[in-house]
Image 1: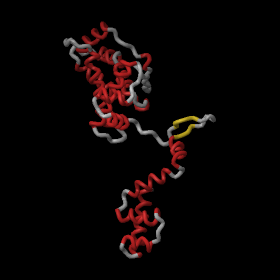
Image 2 (image 1 turned 60 degrees about the horizontal axis):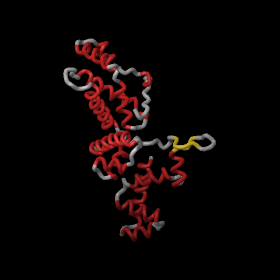
Image 3 (image 1 turned 90 degrees about the horizontal axis):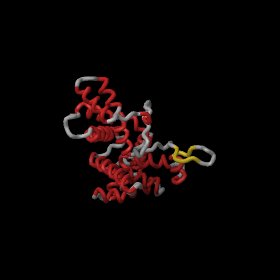
Image 4 (image 1 turned 30 degrees about the vertical axis):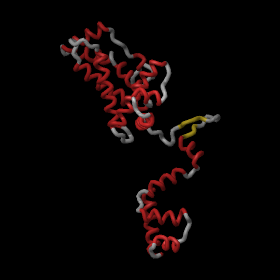
Length: 256
């Protein structure tokens, strides 16, 4: 596995791997209804779940949930596997584990993303893993896009879409004094301390009517008087006053 996966309550480094003979023995007992054999067989194949999680290269704070989803796929595979077929259990189980993990990701994304975009992102992650193993180095987005036969911009957007959002207060760097520097601090350095208010105002303006937006622009961006605004909008100053008060109340409500 190329990536270490941390799962709460489980020492993943101590998980055992079954020998072929022991796996075959347990499988036979399972099919005869031996619950203890079933538990040992599933536990002995948990590394298949960890391997699939590692391939996704997602942030580790969701590993516990992904591990549970992958275990559902592993259990389904163990219960439905036919040892009479000329197929290794791992070959049969991995697609089922992968399917459960991807299903969980599709249903639980914080940001709602279209299924086609998610599917492209997951195929890109799979190709990224394959190219990394083949070339011994992590490929860039252009190489992944070429392997998929897709536009690089589409692949980049798809990968960005499934990335976990960062908290504004998550440490992104540590200065010489050892104090954490949050993402919001970094943005403030670039955009000024009032950047959150400006974003909130921009979103609140989207709830205003075209006439209200025009009035706010005339009065507060161009700095014109109510009389000048009335002349430009072709309405009376009394109407301007009512319209302005209504627009400001709407902005204040949507910014709370």
